[in-house]
Length: 303
Image (cartoon, rainbow, N blue to C red):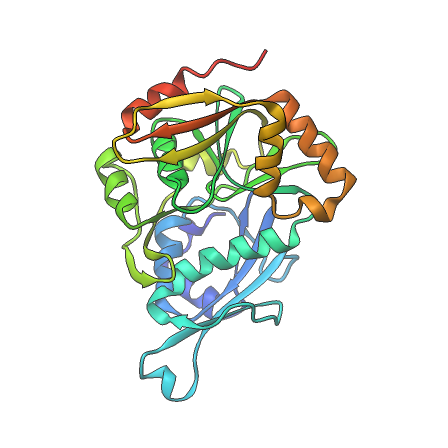
């Protein structure tokens, strides 16, 4: 049973009641919220995801609720709590769906220490994955969305999850977060893509989310292996350039993008060392998405 099997009324009833238990890769999130923006976003972007028993086990218990008192009517706000904790300040109610996405990322990045977690997009084709670690503003999500629209499998837009015992990449495909100008760039590049309505004036500017391909969601149980590490950087007018970098340098840069490398200690070091050893690593500068697609299609498997 998937989210799409529910009527809109059933979806809203579950969200406002015991909750909607949605599986994304290895995680089940029990989501509760009476807010229409949440139901709208889930109906549009999560239709392909499997449902679990709301009375069963969930990795994360997520609650997004309206403010009480005068704030319920004047500039209404949304509050987020997970398992009784309130890690974020309230946001305008219109920002509820982006807040849900940020909240789910926060849940994973602060709690899923069974994995080595890297802040990176991950896509895969023909059994080989490319990891895209990068800070905000680098064009990582734009590049990820473009690759996915050209047939690459989406593993994640935000989190590369590596199993320490074998170095396998564990998919957690969810909607791709696009910001500001990237929204129109992807609309033009992939006219058939399903995107949510942009939400303006968030803490990250204007935000919209791209629906994960159905095939990527259906294959969320299939692990893969990293073959390439590519550090992307969008620069207006720049020529498309893929530059090899040394493994030692790649190790340090990936470690800088890890959420829990230090917490895992020697296990984190050994896991990352194994990943670096099996991958070819590159700096990537681009401004043209069509040329970027050609560069990725031409990547040779590591020797």
